[in-house]
Length: 167
Image (cartoon, rainbow, N blue to C red; front, side, top):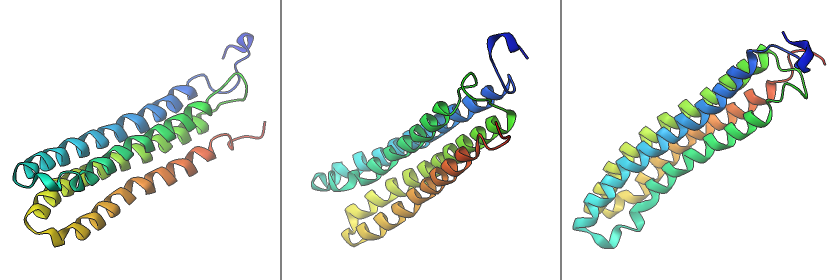
């Protein structure tokens, strides 16, 4: 530990914290990208047969895009909490931030996969049977809720950082 630089805490701890911030953003954006691409293919395919339904069928694409914002929120929360020169940053804090980022990121990835698959099949089915629209939206909402759960858990876990020792 280099006490001459004014660093306090564990020197490797910020690595885990920053890894958590990166994991939140990367995995959430992977989910958003997959959901956007998969449901976008469905919208394009459906738009050939029923072009008047294209704007109504954009809902899954928008919902998939929101997943990236969840990861961005957690990444910003984590990265602003890492300042070892101002406050001691221990391994407990790094692991709390890592788990926070992984919770949000992996929940966003899985929600993006669900939104992509449901969005693709849903907009195609909606083109053939308009009564399926409400059911598709409900399924998409429940898939989005999975990412929201990850965001909530990520915020709670991130708030645990800094509680390892009394400074």
